[in-house]
Length: 156
Image 1 (cartoon, rainbow, N blue to C red):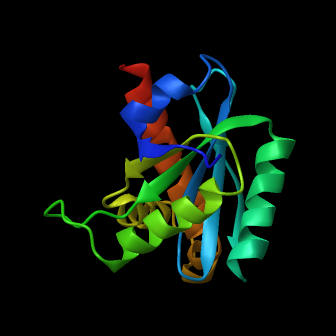
Image 2: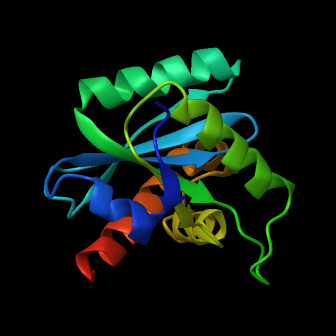
């Protein structure tokens, strides 16, 4: 049976009260990965996965999920500023549907508006070079997405 996919506040009830979550920032060329602690207080960047095929990408993400004993996924959903969903959001939803066929871990969708822009500003303010920013931007965006979701969960 495929994993459930829904907005964060709806999926939260399907996760056990404790257990790490894995956050993903799906880019066209890379996937940023972050993971939380089991108490879901703090997100930490894990790695940036270079995208290949869906099968290879999913295998790596599921391996990371197993290694870290996560209880669910949080996918950043790139919603437009006006709240509408464009091609990138549709692509994220398709990725979630395909991933759901391979796991039973519930998948939450979290509005990631401006996450990459916020991370880019933060890295520039920290005087990180353009080349280094390119290498870590997706991982940091995943961290930003997951931390935002964790903060929201703490207020439920």
